[in-house]
Length: 322
Image (cartoon, rainbow, N blue to C red; front, side, top):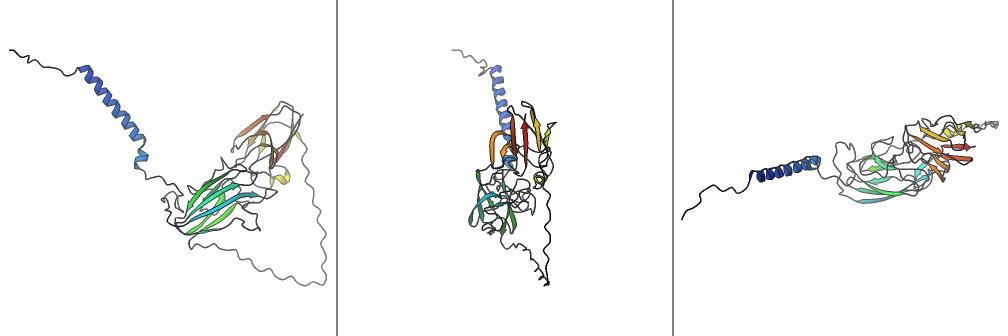
């Protein structure tokens, strides 16, 4: 009986090549996925709350080891929109309430926009301005703020003693009064000591001064539209309304069907919203547009169209369509 001792091939070179190609493809795809997530593999678990108070660029997440404090804050505005605050206007109870907490405590903010303007929220260690917002403490942002009636929540954990500030992060709103203090641990806030006013001298006869005659600021005459209407630098701070220069020109005339354009020449974000402050009529609205941006609209019906800025309601202007 004879046996076949010839070599037997278990596979073919073609099949071996295909298998090698498949294995190489798996290695390449797996490597691409692995290295595309390199930051994830080498990172610590992402914090779910605010960064430790202080230099958020170098500090790690603060640990919640203490009490939980609930704080409800509402954005409010005075009738002339010149004074802004949390919960109550200056001089009224609960105006910009101070929050006292210890290291390791957590404060949960429930934020409500009870005003008519746009607002946003955050906690910062900076004594002025709207920067340095601590991660996790934000509600909305200056470029995507809360509209009237909207709300949100955020958290801040105190990582070390110090004085911090909760503010409206829309540029200019902190300066108008939307700022409150968070005092952590033994940190103290220097109170302004008012010097006692000297007692007035007793005069034998006091003559009442003659009242000053105030010149009435007249609204400028309408001018024919001739290029973009400017939202000038500084219009995000009250004062331009006293001279009707929040939009320049303040009052323009156009023909029906003519396109009108506004140019944001300020450093703050603004809107061009038809209607009166607190009462938009829905005819046109730019939404928020940033510095350097433009907005255009075409009005086909004759009439007078007042408009304003939702973020800075003292800013008003008029379009007359002939």
